[in-house]
Length: 76
Image (cartoon, rainbow, N blue to C red; front, top):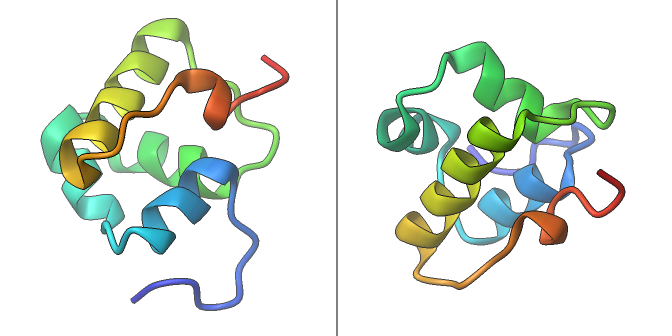
């Protein structure tokens, strides 16, 4: 299910727009479910650089779109 009315981060919106499930991100990154959920829903979440890289790489792999961390976390 995509975009069910909850506020989403830029990362979450990107996944929704490209119809990528958070579960797929979790499978690709092998990150904890709570970490992926925070990256998609918590506006105050600033991932560590290593987690940020995993999330960006997963977004690229699952969508085929070239993105950068600053696309999702511009004020970090």
